[in-house]
Image (cartoon, rainbow, N blue to C red; front, side, top):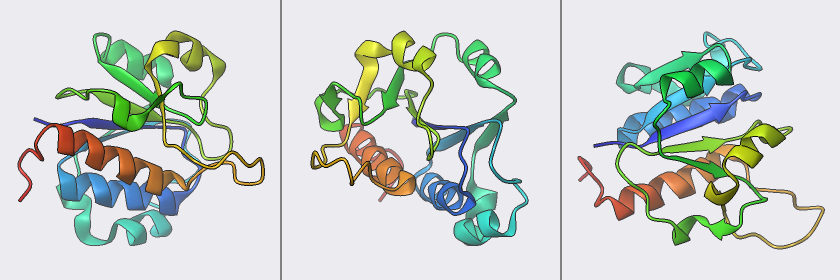
Amino acid sequence: MSINIVLYQPDIPQNTGNIARTCAITGTRLHLIKPLGFSVDDKHLKRAGLDYWHLLDISIYENREEFFAKHRNGNFYISTTKGNRNYTDVKYEDECFIIFGKETAGLPEEIHDRFKDRRIKIPMIKDRKARSLNLSNSVSIIVYEALRQLGFPSLN
């Protein structure tokens, strides 16, 4: 029993390292869609994930076409500030995929259009100067809600 976190073209190694650590400690799978803004050997990425890398179930894809071809029948949600439902308003299912966009640009319109009814958001103040939460914080918030709904499988 698990959920899948998908990072679309992440730019910041420290964010991805923190997310990798969260995934490793919760038994959540991590999927990275290239291009990445760093090397997976990047010292900042490794430092943020500390010594948890051996616990991580990670897959890396050359592009979104490869990712979606491999997971053709996946149950997808996309996390976005343009979401029409709060992340707590959906019922997460075992093996679902939660997709997060690039820190600097979010997700492409094609993905928004494809999953228009599957967009979720974390409620935030409506101030143009405060665009969004940090990516690793957003992932943590949603991962723990999904795991809570699933009864925290294999966590004590």
